[in-house]
Amino acid sequence: MKAIILAAGYATRLYPLTEHYPKPLLDVGGRSILDRLLDQIRGLLPHDECVLVSNRRFVRQFEEWAGQRGDPGVRVLDDGSTRPENRRGAIGDLLFALERSGGAVDLLVAAADNLFDFPMGDLVGAFRRSPGVWVCVHEVKDPARQRRTGIAELDAADRVVAFREKPADPKSCWAVPPLYCLDRATTERLPEYLATGRSADSPGLFIEWLVPRVEVRAVRARGAIHDIGTLESLAECRRRYAGAAPP
Image 1 (cartoon, rainbow, N blue to C red):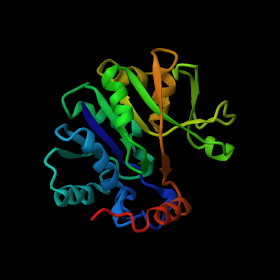
Image 2 (tube, rainbow, N blue to C red):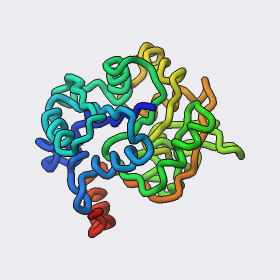
Image 3 (cartoon, helix red, strand yellow):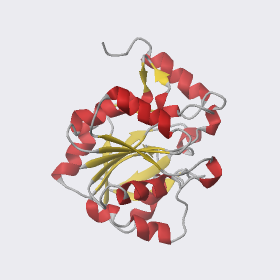
Image 4 (spheres, helix red, strand yellow):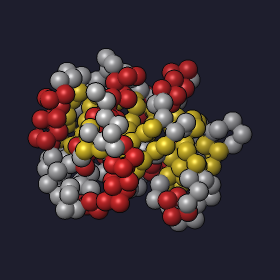
C-alpha cells in the first residue's frame, strides 16, 4: 500500500499566516501538523512509499522538511501549480501522484491539514481484511460544520448508501474527513472521474461519485478529528495539543 498526502493547497483562509508558509508545516503543540500525520501513517506503513504532493510555491519548504525528517521513503512531488487559480485540485493531484509513482496501486489517502485523534489502524485494518473503498466517519451534530465537510448516510452494516460533499442540506450526522483507503481497481477509475468534467477540487467529490457505482464501507472513528481550516480552528487545535509533543 502506498500513502499519498495531499498538501498542494494554498490555505487562503489562514492568510497572512500561510501566504508564504505551507499550512501542514505549522506548529501544533511542538510538532508540525504534517509530522503528527506522518507519525501515524508510518506506524502502519513503516516500509511503504509515502508521496506528498505540493504546489510549486511551497515545494522547497516541504523538501527541506523531508530532508530534516530523514525518511528515505518520503517523496515530495511538485504539481506545477503556482497560485490558487491554476491548481490541479485534490483529485487531479491524486492522479498526478499515481502517474509519477508507477500507476494505480492500493492507496491510503490523507489531506495534510487534518489531525486524527483516533487509531488510524482501524481503517487500514478494515481495508486489509476486505479490500475495496473504505472511509472513516465521525458524528458531527452542528449543521454549520456538516455543511463544510462530506456527509455520509449509512445502512445497518455501515455501508455508505448516500454521500454528499459539503451539502447545503445535510441528511445525516456522519461526517467523512479526507482520509480514505482505496484499492487498485478504484484508483484506476480516477481518469474516468476527471473525464466527466466534474470538479477536481475536493477528494470527497470522488467518493461522492463512487458511491452509486461501487460498494463504499465506513469505519466509525474512535476519537476526535480536527480540520484546521481557519485561524480560529488552528488556535483551538493548539490549545488542545499544548504540552502534547512527544519527547
